[in-house]
Amino acid sequence: MSSSSQFSRRRFLAGSVATAAVPSLLATTRKSFANNVAANDKINIGMIGVGKMSYGSHLPHFVKMPEVKVVAVCDVDTTRRTAAQKRVNDTYGNSDCAAYNNYEDILARKDVDAVVIATPDHWHALVILNACAAGKDIYCEKPLTNNLMEAKVVMDAVKKSGVIFQTGSQQRASDNFHYACELVRNGHIGDIKTVTVGVGGPSRPDNLPDEEMEPGLDWDRWLGPAPKRGYSSVLSPRGVHNHFPSWRNYRPYGGGGMTDWGAHHFDIAQWGLGMDKSGPIEIVPPKDPKSGHGVKFIYANGAEVIHGGPSGVTFIGTEGEIFVNRGKLSSKPDVIIKQKIADDGIHLYDTPGNSHAAHRQDWVRSIGTRKQPCCPVETGARTVAVCHLGNIAYWHGEELNGKSLKWDPAKWEFVGNDKANAWQDYPYPRREGYELPTG
Image (tube, rainbow, N blue to C red; front, side, top):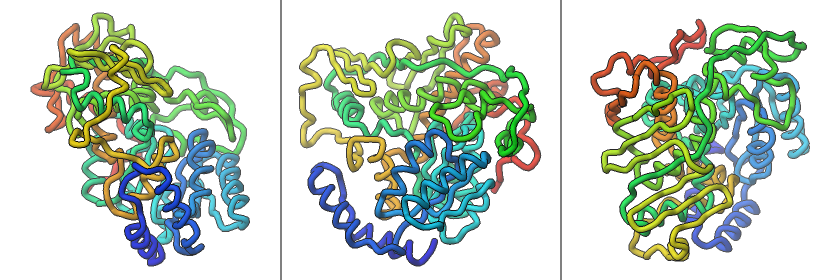
């Protein structure tokens, strides 16, 4: 950490806003901070992975934040990293931003205080662990990891390191999700019996054909820990593009809709159930595992979370229902969503605003205060664990033959089932040079 960043964080701590309850006060505070921050008194950030999510969303926001300075970008595609470098330099009116092929070059820089990780999912764990070892604060996109074992290793490493970590579960910064979960947590629909989570299904094996590739992409580096294979434009379309690539639909690189949108909506289910530090205790595979829906998660309090139903999250209680999705909030009866949360009721974490940008702002604020942000590593790890548990039930459903899996969320293991515990990791070894660090 640079001395200027230490000073910046002290300034943050002295002038930050404790909550975002009063928007006008927050706006005034931000404006005041922006007017007083010196050009060399900022949190220096490196962007690791500048594809669709980072180039189109994270980067444009961070380069305009007065509290931070983007000093480096990294991507294995020459066109993408050059475009990101240009966007940074054009915004700042200089040529100071460095561009790297290897993220280790960013982590080695002593002037870099924090990193934003937006690589494909199969890279998350390795980059997170190395960033922790380098002492960098971290914002990492959801889903946090690509399998159950990685989630536990990452959770433990981040806690031990003491870095400030934000999982990119941006829905926690949206008023409708926040309010829905507060209503549920405060008993406005009675005891929760069922929660339905409408997202896509599991990923499938990689059977994509090999293609010729034009120069400019470090394909071997893109694969990283995944098995060696020929190039595929489905997995890594070249250059700057305006769509989310389909690597997430193939098992070596992602968990399908189950982890992609599941990391958002199962996160809200966990939040509403008050399970940010726990999870289900039993996973029941559907009668037809190949259908890709219907897996059931049973919690210790008897609540059941079912993968299925309309897109979004539906909380069903003894006294009503609440449905929430992006831009949508409704209840049965209607009066439920018109009720106020009592002053002495349960009030969930507030972010500084109602947008994805507020989720990033919350991370930056936490870097200053050194207090945990709204979606710290354990929250992200336990949410993605639910997604991975569901995928395991689908992938091994025929072998399970209708039998449920008992899960101990405290010990992070399947109870009395060594075979299932082996499913926590990949069914293949990581490639040499891409193993997870130990110790």
